[in-house]
Amino acid sequence: MFTETNTRGPVEIITINRPKQYNALNTATLDEIASHLGRVDEDDDLACAIITGTGEHFAAGADITELKDKNAYSGLYDPRMASWAAVRSFHKPLITAVEGYCLGGGCELAMMGDVLVAGEGATFGQPEIKLGIIPGAGGTQRLTAAIGKARAMKMILTGDTMGAKEAFESGLASDLTEKGQALERSLEIAATIARRPRAAVRLAKEAVLKAAEHAVTSGLQQERRSFELLLSTKDKEEGIAAFLEKRKPVFTGG
Image (cartoon, rainbow, N blue to C red; front, side, top):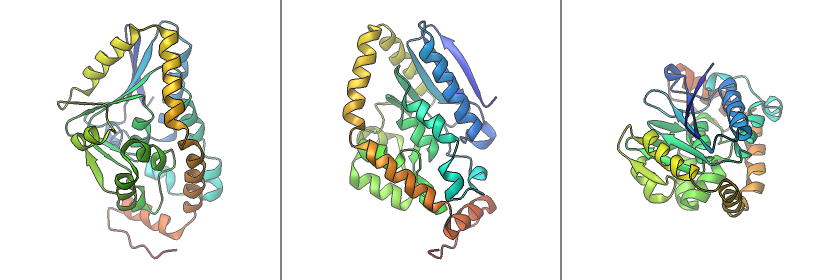
């Protein structure tokens, strides 16, 4: 098991538990998260869910070792896409409590939350460009929707990161807490939401997402096609090899 769950009254806490890998999201971890959320959706005693990471970090990205041998064809049938779809289709409020690294797939997961709480010291980013690829689970679309085209473009094209304070001020995070307090603040928010009428909460979430996702849907398709194509490039092979070998990549444009 790569995740743990803990029930606090009407709130389910889902904790990513791969601290040695900085909670990197491998296929099994995403599958477990999707399974937990499916169970929460069906449990009338639970009002909402929180996703967080064990140790000092939320999630440092995808598990790069899994991307090493992927190409455009295998990317087309990536089993992780079903898990991402399950997170997107979760009907109840989802809060993401972020500390430490929140990068790549981790940042994409955090942005899928309805409320994002950031502890001081959290670091957000979509650094996939450094591996010769791009975000493949909504990063280009949701980051742009959250912080605007100019900031999102700079982060995605450079691979630069953003601190918690800037994430809060730019609208990426809804709340900023002291370091180590993101989960406690998330529990407070979840408890408030749990006291609201369930039907109204569900319909309110659907209404807000309708506005937020309207421009995102078609962009997600473009993003995914581009991600899949890049999996077969020489620069992707070089970028991931350099990452695993802990050296600077030498991109050739191939």
